[in-house]
Image: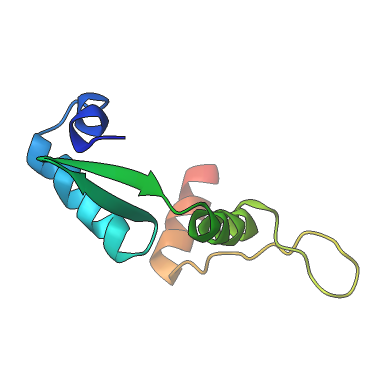
Length: 90
């Protein structure tokens, strides 16, 4: 797909699109080929599949090793926040 076609899909400046394409190419997710004045971009599907697999790891619930139950982690609150919650519920 040509860079202009890609840019036309988004509602931001041309420079933003070209910068994103450069970043994706540096990461190995895209390659380009020059055809005259145009750059034709291609997705590197194997590299993209690696990223997709990595992201899927973060989308599934975290399981602990013993029972397969969801591992829930509680955020620590400082004493003042805890006191404020108690005062509101009283």
